Image 1 (cartoon, rainbow, N blue to C red):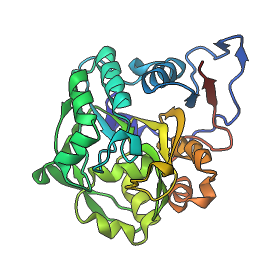
Image 2: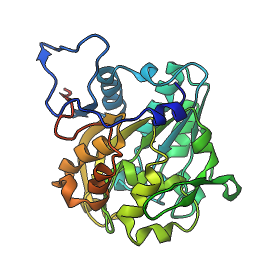
Image 3: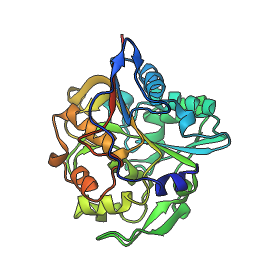
Image 4: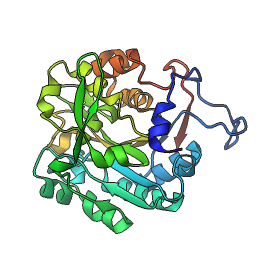
Length: 300
């Protein structure tokens, strides 16, 4: 199934937040059934991803041979990995390899940065690690945005990056961190990196506008990098004291569900975060938050 068909097929699910039953180390899934989200902790980035994909049924559930896959990390800031402003580069590299192994013909990586693009790509170390893993890492070009109909409550149309729209599959890979405007930046907010126009306009009536636009561009998968999280002074950070090593990764085919799960890392709930609360109200979630099936794994 191509990504555009996949997005059109999304519907509000009724399946579960109970943890899935376990017998020994084996999940008691029904035939062809997998959890709606996986939470893995206490590992290095590559280990976390490998186990999360294993529990989630593997990338071949979503990526077909010959697919063009876009991986959308956060590369927005001129910061090294230790300061937790950008997605972990080792996680990005591991995901590139996993996409290739699943049959992807090409893996593209890009982000519309907030600081100088060359410095962000270099100092985040994402360009180095991703290219070594076989990805095509590109800078966002102004002439590659396409205006699409949004038809939201407030936003009627917006420029979205063409390479994102044309990808067969998209994997959204935000880092979990504090944000001075929206309290947190996770999967829903990470999609601002493919939005054109004056993004400052989105900050006024933020929750309404972000969810209007996101409704049209939800990814195939969301993988939240919580290996390190930024607990204060986000989104740019800069003080090592604000960084917490949590060694966690969350994966779901529902961005809203993944974001909601990640809120516990910050001691928050969906009703505390206006844009996540509104995403549920507008029907952006595939699954009922009260019945989400989650597989939790602690490594080591």
